[in-house]
Length: 112
Image (cartoon, rainbow, N blue to C red; front, side):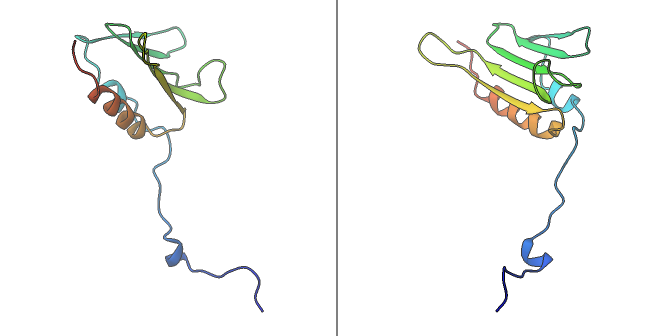
């Protein structure tokens, strides 16, 4: 009698996964000066705010202070009746994935 199980590499469907931070410009290029403010601070962290102040994106290539490897922060402020939300990614999250999340958030906005 054999213990455990046996399999093959083909059965496991081994894949190559995208790893590493990639190019943060994929994220930052989504913001226009017409609709957003962008500031680079003394740590070289980048902060993007919507002109109405309800959207925030922060990128800390060396890690956000007070976090364990946090690199990206997306936050949308809620209203008096609906809570806001935030999303965090670590410094090694591929920029393509963060860009996709930002795209999704921006696509949900509509002017009042």
